[in-house]
Image 1 (cartoon, helix red, strand yellow):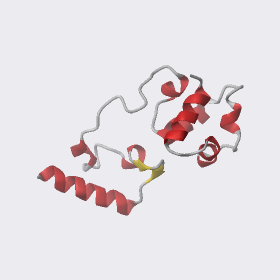
Image 2 (cartoon, one colour):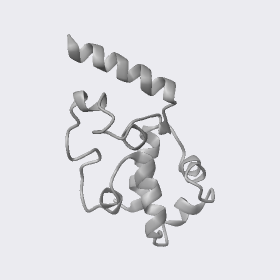
Image 3 (cartoon, rainbow, N blue to C red):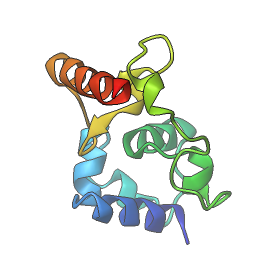
Length: 114
């Protein structure tokens, strides 16, 4: 599978077009499509990897695991010092608002106490 095919598959899983992904990360609308014939820049690949929360190695086909290699303990999600919510938690590829993050932490904290 090519870099473009992996990105296209990830985009479809999120019900987005490749064009939308490109625009969301600050590239021209056809930039990712061009990667079918050209090699992308490392910094552009990193933007795509961050967008989909995958590694650059996954996009390059060096690893098959789409998700994180290490499991996340839910107890760590309520501890600010252990998980960066802006880096690890999003909804539909978009960062959560501070209000939503606070609400989720409260819900998780209550559930973990039970």
